[in-house]
Image 1 (cartoon, rainbow, N blue to C red):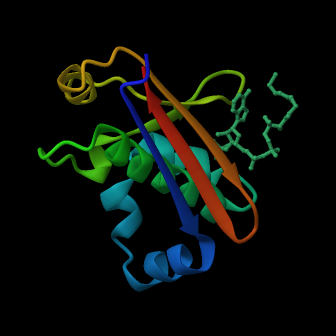
Image 2: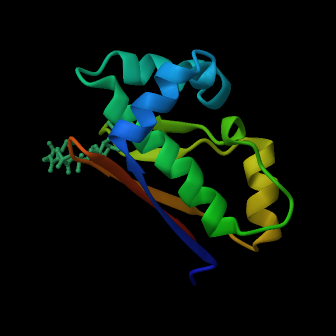
Length: 121
Ligand SMILES: CC(C)(COP(=O)(O)OP(=O)(O)OC[C@H]1O[C@@H](n2cnc3c(N)ncnc32)[C@H](O)[C@@H]1OP(=O)(O)O)[C@@H](O)C(=O)NCCC(=O)NCCS
């Protein structure tokens, strides 16, 4: 059963401007693992923006009053490249509040935008 769904689209130009304006932005929002993953890609901004969209989509999918910081939501890719949100104790606690057991995410990018969807089942 679906317990929550969230979607987000991130405009690449706006995202890139935000990153350039605030040098601490990446370190504040992304984990070292996420930064390493994106940095090894040819066009890293697309991958950062995709992860940013996942974080926003997750927040929408849980839609709870208790706030969760963007840097508490970490995206990792499995050996096939499939993205997933790392199930930290904090994420597990949020899932429990939604009576959810599983989180599924998907990311897509073009040169102009990155989109992500998050589903709790
Ligand atoms: C995987 C695939 C669907 C990605 O589609 P695309 O149009 O090239 O690129 P998109 O921008 O839409 O999507 C990229 C995102 O897809 C996701 N992705 C990559 N591999 C994935 C997989 N096996 N399953 C689910 N999602 C995957 C990633 O999140 C990636 O973004 P990220 O690297 O920033 O995390 C595409 O490369 C494909 O169909 N490949 C053929 C099958 C294949 O080679 N599979 C590889 C694993 S066996």
